[in-house]
Length: 119
Image 1: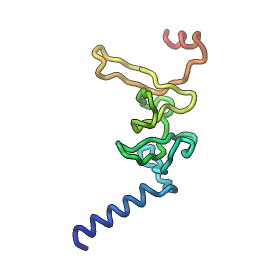
Image 2: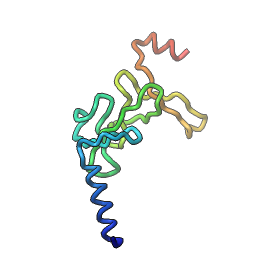
Image 3: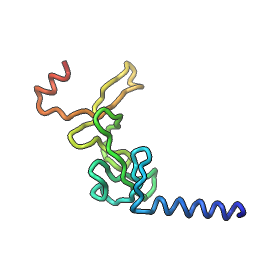
Image 4: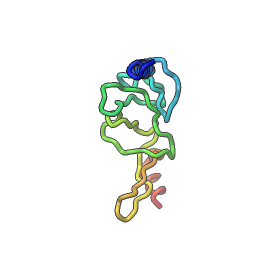
């Protein structure tokens, strides 16, 4: 097999894997199942765009204690919001703001509970 044919076969195999709607293998929290909206994904997933492409896949939502990134438009930047009942909160901030750490935490039930956690 010459080099151009090997490249062609590799590209063909990769396109079939990405385009397959029934791919079940998990890799870094992504099921690789194609989607149009998050309704096409499992309950613990959301539909995200792959780096500046029109292809969207289902990706696992961060769980309690997992790293997260605050986002205004979930799915557009390739990231999912935290799982249901959780919110992405700043849990550590250095003096210069260069090493801020965000994690998925429980949504406070009330203002009193929120105040308790701050103390």
